[in-house]
Image 1 (cartoon, rainbow, N blue to C red):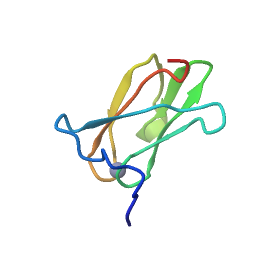
Image 2 (tube, rainbow, N blue to C red; image 1 turned 90 degrees about the vertical axis):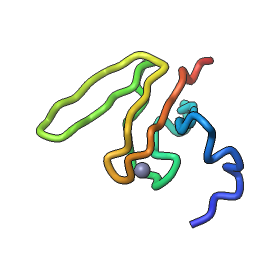
Image 3 (cartoon, rainbow, N blue to C red; image 1 turned 180 degrees about the vertical axis):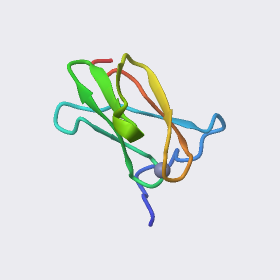
Image 4 (cartoon, rainbow, N blue to C red; image 1 turned 90 degrees about the horizontal axis):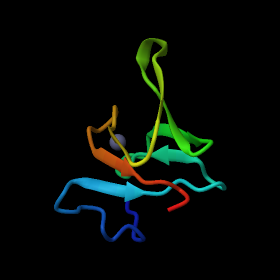
Length: 78
Ligand SMILES: [Zn+2]
């Protein structure tokens, strides 16, 4: 699948910076679109296997469980 609007898809650092918004709080992998976390109350809600859940502050980085891409998200408020 092609995403023509993500022209910076492959940066030299290997991590892409995305900003969740109030309209779309979901944080998804920039490569395979797998759900990585959900932004709640200014923090990122991450869920892992076996019921482990974490609330983390921005900026947050996580490796996609699906494709292994390192994703980064910064605060939706800047
Ligand atoms: Zn992925």
